[in-house]
Length: 145
Image: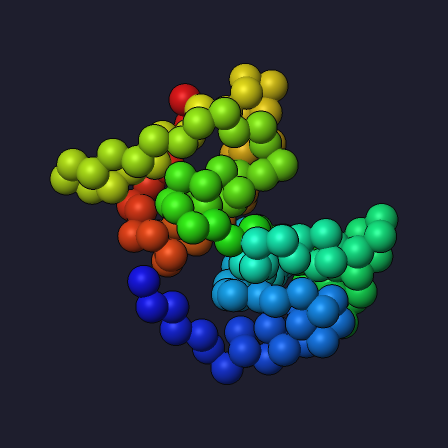
């Protein structure tokens, strides 16, 4: 799919790449909740995640400080199944199956102890994963199994 970037997203990607040396393939800004907290999700080129995080998370914290927003990193993938698994990280995802009937649904088998991690506080993590999966692979919904 073709992803269109806003001017803000392009600026955030430029800052991210300058700060980390890693390649970002996409950037999405999420406004969370009533307090208007924003977080930025960067889709990072496969193999660049360690560079993006930095030693002890120092590099990504520097990016958060410069943006004044929390940052989430998702490693890009070549298949929709791998992408959904990466988007749900750090939850342990054993398997993802994509079903295409009336709508495209990704069924993610998540360790029972990690269901809360996959969903996140107030559903933030799964909502982000669904939005990214829709944006990159036209997946309408993610169901945890």
